[in-house]
Length: 169
View (cartoon, rainbow, N blue to C red):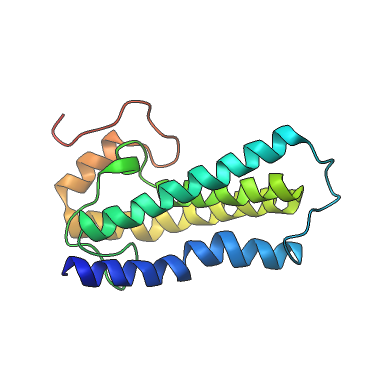
C-alpha cells in the first residue's frame, strides 16, 4: 500500500480506535469530563494521570506512524501492513498501542478521580489479551511466518522488556 494511503487510513482508524476507546468510552462511562467525587483530589494523582495520558498518546501516535511508514499499512485488519512492524515501542512489547491506550484511560481516571475508569482499563486489557491470543497472533503468524515467530519469542506481549529487541540480534 502506498504510504500516503496508509497514512490517510491510519488517521481514520486512529479516530475509530483509540479516540473511541480512550475518549468517547471514558466520557460515556463517567457521564462527562467533570471531576468526580469518588476519590479525594490529590495533586500527585492528577500529575501522574496527566503524565500517563500524555505518554500513552505519544506511544499510540508513534505506533500509528510506524504502521503507515515502516509497515505501509494500518493497525486494522481491513488494511494490514505489507511488512511486520517491529520498530519504536514494538521493540519493547508486542502490544504497545493497547497498553498505551489503557494508560490513557487510567490517567483519565486519576485526573477525573473516577475509579470506574481504572476498572474499565483493566477490562479493556483483559478483553484484548483474549482477542490478541485467539485472533491477532495467529493471523500475524500466518501472514509473516518465521520472522513473527522469532519476534514473538523475543518480545513479551504485555510486560515491556527493558532493553529493546532488534531483529537478528
